[in-house]
Image (cartoon, rainbow over all chains, first blue to last red; front, side, top):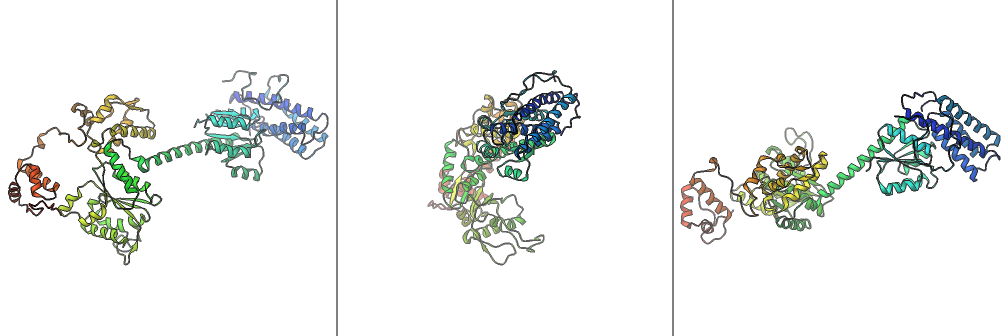
Length: 137
Length: 472
């Protein structure tokens, strides 16, 4: 996996932009996970529980793929802990660490401020290159 | 096959990343964010490979895998998913995936897996295309021809394929005798058995016996082990004896015995054993003349030619030259990856005017050469041999049954006596030694023929005045 500190913008500027966009999405997803925990741990089989695990599952797969293994680790912990019936406190702590790691990654990349709203919960976005950020290639 | 890779994942971040990583390697992709969308896209185009996430919102991956196979059989699928237990991997492979890449993925691993899958898919497509071409080349589909002469021959061959009788294919070199034999075999009751061909004229005299009947270890110098001959190899199937007229008399005797008894004895062997073989033979010689001259056994001839079929020379197959030329052009265009689409009008006229002494084989070789030589979309006169181009100047080929008079050259003029002898002997051969009939055909008297034969020292031992037919 590409490490968090293995960014060399001149190598692949398009990839850098993709990573920044991912982090913006990841931040929104982590925030949504925190919101879902606001009223206590959602039922594993309920709609909110399924949504919580879907977000965690996606971040688990994509985090390390984008070069942020710590995102994969925390997201995987959140998914597994929720499946195992973990306490709301434990889940909040894990999601807090997840949000923190995303912020840290954003700071390392030095990207622009994320747009308001972040990723919509539609789960069916088409593949597009984000319009924000500097021109690449 | 489109060459594009279908990406199926409901996580847009993964779709973007995988598209980017594969795009960096020159691999084009098309995204689908659900199982239903993936199936719809598969109906529209055949991807070179599919990258599939197992956890889709509408159709689980294990349900989607067999449906992908049903729509696009043989399309390789690489599973890209978070789950990584051994059971999951085994399950994916059992369902037909060719590889498994866990998420989060390593770029090099993903690229290698997808590239291998895409190449495997391309190879599969190529194999299927070749198999289709092979199937098209088997059976009577391989005998292309619309002419009346070829239709007659094919009709006889179809009847031959419905039986087990010995088939003798007669015709000039290059008329497709082996192709015809293979077609009869492929269409007949022995199609699942082997088809073994041997060119009796191409194997050295000292080896042909061992080739046909096999040999025991130590039966001669160099026989270091037992060897099964072609008859044994063809057991349960068909043995095709090409150029059967080249067999020397001693081997003709052995062959006749095998055909009569259906048993073979290896060279140096003590006992014999049965073989179940249908024999087809071919020759471009006039075996009846060979019988008359004592070079070929008449009893073997009659055993081989229970069902004789003459394959017409290409010059007698009216309309078939361009039919065959177009088919060869299509075949060689694909094989050599050339841009040639057809023939120019002048090239077509030249091909139709040429007499094709080498028949279909000559045409096939010429078209292959032309496809390689031609850089444009149409084969022109510049890509044809001089001999073919010159036929345009001479005019169209003669009608079937007519011989084209060759242009005279000094070397062609032979002494009159020699020409007379050739014509008289040819007439006697054609009439099976019936001197009266030969005289009638030549427009001379019987007595004249007798005088000429006496002058040439040839005994009139064939035929009699009563027109009995004579011959060997």
